[in-house]
Image (cartoon, rainbow, N blue to C red; front, side, top):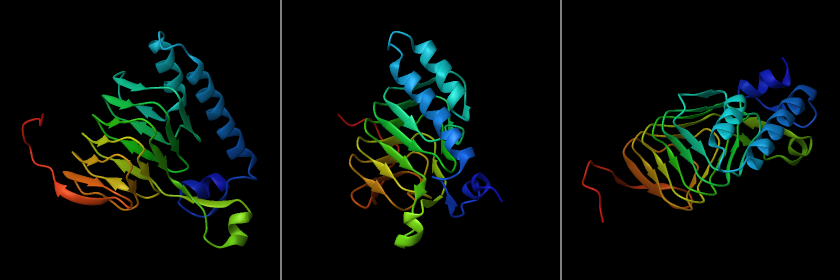
Length: 192
């Protein structure tokens, strides 16, 4: 089994000493660098680069503001009407899937990658990657970190500064470190 196959299967794999994975990360970094240098007056060029980088996009109704960084790109799927503000980082050793109408504030991070707790394996560069899923109609506040293996349910809001270590159910407002559901969200008029 190759290191990439192990990575995609959620097994412990060697990310640092595998030529195939190094080459794929290098390709993604070059495309991220190219994207981050494009003038904001050229949104079509930005979108063109992102379509080369990302695994799947649903239509052209998406925006990612520079700077944006990811590990591989091909493990990222974004739904329609997707918006990610400045300084989004997605470590996509495993699949990261965003639904439709997802809004991400600045400085948010989505980490599928983790490392063994024991020092010997960690020092060898071994890691694992577990998928992240973000449902439809989700708003993620500034400076949120989403950890490996987490699912955020439809119609949920994650408050600024949260560290999401466990699944968040549909229709939930969650915040804190670690993030906890503080209440259910019901269809209500916009608060002013």
